[in-house]
Each structure stands twice: as C-alpha cells, then as structure tokens.
Amino acid sequence: MVKPMGEPSDNRRRLPSVERLLAHGELQSAVEAHGRQAVVDAVRSTLAAAREGVARGDDVPPTAALIADALERAATAVRGTLFPVINATGVIVHTNLGRAPLSHAAREAMDHAGQGYVNLEYDLDAGSRGSRYVHAEALLRDLTGAEAALVVNNNAGAVFLVLSALARGREVVISRGQLVEIGGGFRIPDVLRQSGARLVEVGTTNRTHPRDFKEAIGPETALLLRVHSSNFKQIGFTAEVSLEELVSLGHGAGVLVVDDLGSGTLIDTSRYGLAPEPMVQQSVAAGADLVTFSGDKLLGGPQAGLIVGRADLVRELRQHPLTRAARTSRPWPRSRRRCCTTCAARPSARSRSGAWCPRLTRCWPSAQPTWPRSCAAATSATVVPSEGRSAAARCPGDVAGHLGALAVPAPDDVAARLREGSPAVVARIADGRLLLDLRTVQPDEDEVLLRAVQHALDKLQA
Image 1 (cartoon, helix red, strand yellow):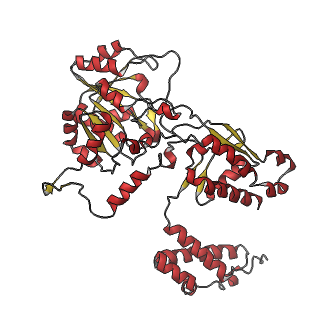
Image 2 (tube, helix red, strand yellow; image 1 turned 90 degrees about the horizontal axis):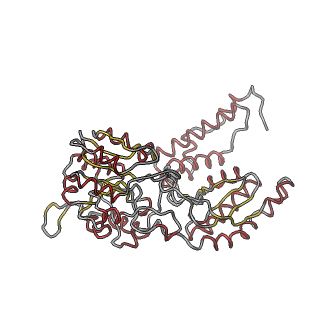
Image 3 (spheres, one colour; image 1 turned 90 degrees about the vertical axis):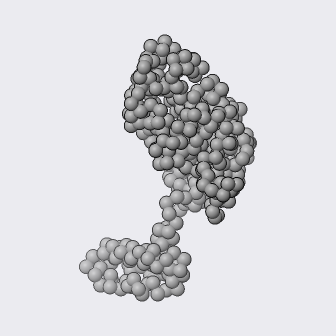
C-alpha cells in the first residue's frame, strides 16, 4: 500500500538502526565471513535505500527483507569485479573477455609455482643469485629456432624496448601500409615517437616496393621494421615487401631487421580453420634479427611479450634500463603442444550445435502463451554457418564452423538476462537473432549454458 506523502518522516523512524540490524544472526555470520566493515557498509546502504523508498511513500520493508538486501550487498562488495563468463560470441581470442583461456597445463604450472617460494632468480647448483630469464628462454629457443629469447610484460612493451634500446635518436624505416592502430589505441607511429626513434615512412598506403626501402636507407638508419597488420587487411591493388627481401636489403646495408608479428603463432593456424598467420619460426628462418610477438592470444598463455632472435641483441636488451620495468616471469608448460592451445579448434561445434537445437527449443514452449502471437513462429533454434572471428583485435577473417541461432522474441532482452546470470553468458545478435556460437564454448560448459538460457527465458516470461 502506498502511503500519503505527508507520513514519510514517521515511517522512517520505524526503520531499525545499523547496530540493531547488525545484531541479527545472519548478519553476524556475514561479519565473520566478510569482515565487519564490509557488512556495516552494506547495512548502511540498505537502510539508506529503505529511507528513500519510505520518503517516496513506500511501506517500511520487513526486517527479513532488509537483512536479505544487506547480505546481497555485502556479498557483491567482497566478490570483486571479475566474474566467470561463458563466451558464446564465436570470437576465439576475445580481447574484452580475457583473450585466450589458459590451458590446464598453464593453470597447473601457475598454481604450483604460486603456492610457495620458487627459484625465480636463484641458481640452485651454484647456490647464488641466478637469472629469471633462463626459465622461458630454453623453451622459446627450442620452439622458434632463435639464438636467444627475452620475456617482457606484453608485445607493446617488447616493441617499445627494442626501439628504445636499438634505435633511439636514429631512423626506423617502415612501410606506410603498416602504420596501423590496434586495440587499446596502440599506434605504431606513437610507439616510435615515444621510444626516441625517428619514423621514416616509405611507399604508399597500398603499395610498397623494395626500392622504396633501398632509397630510404642512410647513415642514420638503425633498423627496418615490419609490422603485421593484425586485424587490418588490404585487398585489391596492393604490393608489399616480403620479409626475405627486407632482410636482404637490410643486411646488405648493415642495418637491422625487426619483425613485429603481433599475436604470433608457432603452428599453422589454417589447419584449425583459422585465417593463416605468419609463424615465428618462419621469421627467424628468414633472417630477421629480432622477432616480437605475444605470449597470450594465439599461444594461449599468460599475458606476455616475447622477443626472440640474435643472442648479442637480446643480451643488449637485457642490459637496458627499461627491461627491469617491463620484465616479467611466466610459468610455461614444457611442451610444444601444450603451449599452443588457442588454435585448437573444436571440430565438434557443428554436431554440438545440431544436438543443442532441439534442447534449446524445448526451453521455451511454456513461455510461448505469454508472448505475442506474432512471435510464436520465432521460438526455434537452427544451425547456421559461423560468422565468428578468430580474434577481436588480431587476425582478420572468418572462422570455419557452425553455430546455433536462437530466433527468439526480444533478443536484446534475452541477451541482457544472459549477461546477468551466474555465470554470465555473452552472446551475439545479428539479423534479429540471438546467436550462441559453440565454437568458443568449452565442452564442459554445455549444460551450464543450457541452464542459463532456460533461466533467461524464464525471467523474460516473468
């Protein structure tokens, strides 16, 4: 019952005090679980919201409702801001969803190393200080064929370190068609400028030839830089200089050649239905002096920037002051197969989608009578060709595969309710249909996803 606006002040006095509400057993248990301050703050927020409601003329909430609200607020406050998400978008390396999931082996290695002390910078044989760089270097040398390797915090840091250490105050020659901006506002010209190197652009946006680089090389040239265009693709009347040609030009003039591969991969991605990506081993074999790439994304490891190449140059990078600011140490599973997990496409996605469609369709028959007659024919699930991408901010191109298209009324509302669930589900909407792409849903998440869809549809009906 709505109270007249003249009575709210009396009703507000009927609300319990903070201490009185805290005295209840449920909230005392919450204090033990979450700490007193978190629960006190939650109780104060609950009472403040109740006062506002009473001021609008609402009834005074019962004590049980106030306690329940305070418990929910306290639980929300202490659980943080990161939540598990089921990625049903079809974007395999989804930058906004944490990029690539860590493999079981990587998680196991991190958990094992994080349980206590480790020999991070301690040589157990010598009984003295060691180097943190040795842990990943041997593996990276084995995987790439490079002489040496260095691990830093991310690939942007790797590129910045290379330019700062080897090209500060000198010229870096790059094709205009490779002056790209990728996710997070990472612009190649800005990185060059901040590193202290001088940018020399050659060629045109769509066509660059070997002669353009040859004419640009001079006494102030420190290195030739090739940058993988990542999520940017040029088609049509185009021409670019191959890495082999760039190496021939650079080494013939006594100039270094650096290849920034962006995501980087150690396996042939086309074998897994992804767009072809340049492999690190190919760049090393082509003669690039240094190659930079990401340790996460397509490799499926923890976030890191990897630099491989000539031993003397890597040694110089290690001694640079910036290395201490950018350095990191990551546990890597000692297996070539286990290091490259992101590209392992799920070949069962189509069959899973086909099996899912009748199960998904059965989720909403009871809800149909509450929906408009015009929507009755829309409550079905079908399998359509996948339009998912291999990455949100990396390699362009579609992913081979199939997905379940849920043709439901109010797809925006259903998508919103899926995001509100626990775990949250992030889907796609295209052509008026809600799309759940099983390409990026872990096999052990199938039943959880089905329950999430049922719950979302039940909430829509309610």
